[in-house]
Image (cartoon, rainbow, N blue to C red; front, side):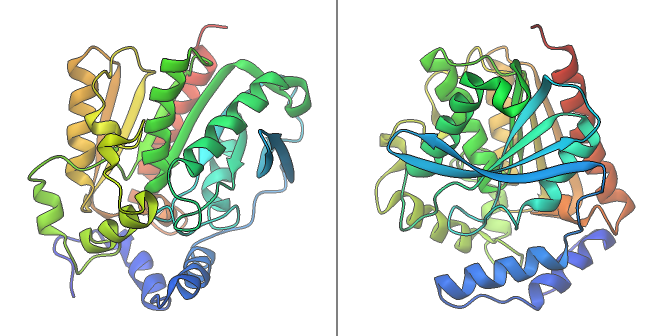
Length: 313
């Protein structure tokens, strides 16, 4: 189905998805890897990339570290949370986004291979991100990072998790974040969302697919009854880190992002809201082939650079 007002930079996403139509869950995961691989590029030679396991409570979580080979430690750092609707994705599917943040912000990036639903429903993915962040802060020399200069960022489902993580860290008195970056999500859906009605189907990651993701993540439970599971309806959003909320115009989560940014701002948080006009969920992946998508990506990096370099130590 043609997408109205689609920016030309988005055609590369549609072409890659057309070649990766999903079937059952395992097939969907395989095809998601194929889709993201079509849009990926190798990390530049100036970056050091390595995988390692981080020991946390009763388990270990695989992460991928990205850092400049010639930079002096300790460096500011970013916990990056991949997308994939909570049911797909891994370190490889988010590789090009993660190395891009390291390349263009100067920060160390720690990309988290969190557990996936439905095998591991809520709060498993949030717990993995939370526990990895705390583990790195407790062992900063082992990771070459400054524990006082840390931000979180995520795209799509990863943005949802980044929003939830920021609230949880505030409530628990955890590390003070320099920033939170939420791309392609708004931490849950506001009542009467026009974008969910407008993009119920006919676009990548339409509202019906989004509902299936939530069903897998919450296993039939009402997320509003689960701690941190529906950030947009959290009763207290005061005192959160500076937020970058970045929506795609042609996306069922667009109004989620608008509403979440507005809620954050109303209670006094520092918020930047940006909307990628004519673009689809996953627009950052088009930065290699589209000048406009590249500008959207550069705007995120500029925000992160400013917040990580200037935050109080």
